[in-house]
Length: 285
Length: 262
Image (cartoon, rainbow over all chains, first blue to last red; front, side, top):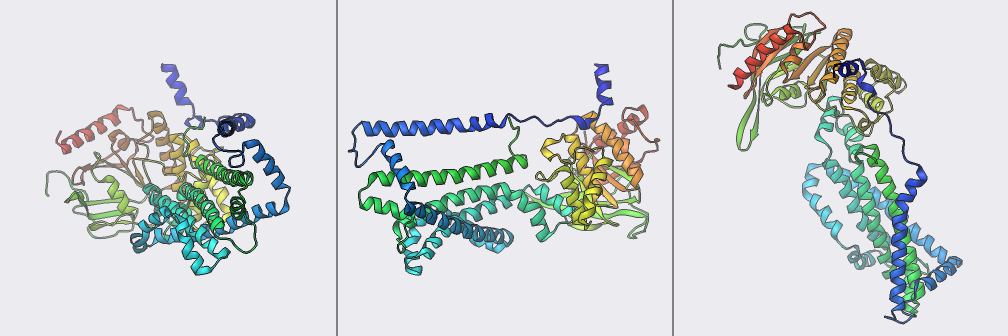
């Protein structure tokens, strides 16, 4: 015991930790991937089982195989690809506007106490508002065009983004703010160096949720609001219904689902990366 | 409020800001509303710290020591009286309170940036400061990759980066194990000697106070006041385990118990 203690005293307390070697990247990817693949497999199996059960005739509910065949055929069709591009472009623009407005609004409400009292809870209320309810108004205001769609996408996504930023700012550790003060950061510089970085994990959460709302609103908008002769995804779904083309309908649903999942998982990666850096993950096993 | 206890600050240098005082507190009081009543955290605190002095305040928890430091750091306004610090002030907390998204060097560099140090110089100055607290090689580590003692070292480097004249320390080593704390005492003492900083160090540990302080101010509890002052004339560096130190610390502990009515 005595010798052990002596050794401790001689040692430096600054060599306690060494970075752990992370697991092989391939194995890590696989560990994250296989449950998802299994879930997809299970879903396809259930789908096929329902089709085989004969609950609905084939032309109303086709099985996965014909749907994927149709999908492959769709992708060879330029106008289909164009539709996907149109929809993605709208999503991107609408989301970008929502991020800009939501962030600016979030900071403004966080900074100005009166605004906070006046509309802090209204932001929450807006978040729970189904954005499709805005469509009739949007069409009256802007007509049957893209502006109406953007209007609804922004109204769907911006409150979630503002809300994420706001809750991040609210939950900054008071101690960090005091440290900022002691170091001489005031007002804007306090925001820039302490509060906003501290709020970033929550802001990313808001961005992720905002994306989900934007994607949802966009689909609703495209189905309801036919703009000119553009063949967006939502429009094609509507056409497929009109022609009772169930295969096409399901093929498009698969595309919409996959786009949503891919972008969501990109946010997931960003979120994990930020949390890791911020030390919020605890022990990374 | 008169008592048989020596009241520091009474009788000399009243109301005068003499230049050799790096820090002075005059009849400072602080009260918070708490559950419908007024809670008096500090009442008529007066003290002075001379330039280059290392003074420890020891008191039970809840005696308003932290409140005093917060006021001196400009984080809170006193209810009455005043606390004054000559020059720049830095404050260290019990938790290192490093910004978790910045590396060790990044935390130090931010303090430099906020002080107006040029970008080109920051990196070198930060490296040198981290060297000074024996953290060379750990510049790129994030706070959650550092041990408690290392975090406090970074916090100390960050406080030094503020180039303060007065360093206020609020139980900075309270959460560390004995050996790490011992080592940090040595480093603090060394840095204090090298820089000529004025340090006001708050602790609830009488031994730590006697280990570090030129003087030890014993705080009474509820309301907090300076109840007693002890001049520590032991030669430096002192050992926490020396019998002389233990005797003085024992007397202070008795005094604290007496204040608390135990």
